[in-house]
Length: 222
Image (tube, rainbow, N blue to C red; front, side, top):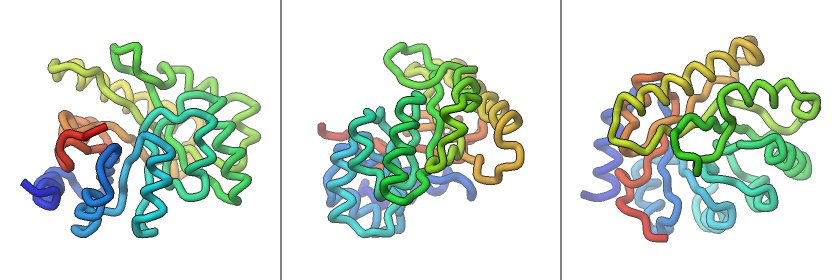
């Protein structure tokens, strides 16, 4: 099946109000152009320099989402154009995003990455840690970042009950942060969870944004 056909099939599963992020990391420009040609405008990349290269050559109405682990010294490559950074996993990184956004006269939208999966290799705040960051004086002084919600990945397993429990934990943390810090903020509205193998379950558990790569583009070539 073609990329266009894959997208058509996925679109049938995604209700109105849930954003599809086409995870285009490691895929060639031609693949993104095919997705663009059938109306997709939100693309997810995991490496800052690859994103910057693609941004230069592709249409400027694309929304670029940074979904991979972001090193502080790489923020400068994307600060002038990135639409949403999903992977804020430390106060240090958020501080650097704030500084880079100020240099570019922007406010950059960000998601707090939560670590709920069993794998230690995954990044993110443990449950409860995000509240400490949002309570900090350093965060409260930031003027050039806007926290839009949370992002998380479920455990890599075939156990759908474990995956469901991980998604439930992410949704609970979103609700806690919303009530505690963003009750009057309409912009705190995003739960980014769900990928090719589990996006339907993620949507059932409250996801508002799914990140799908393999099901659209096929296996990626690094």
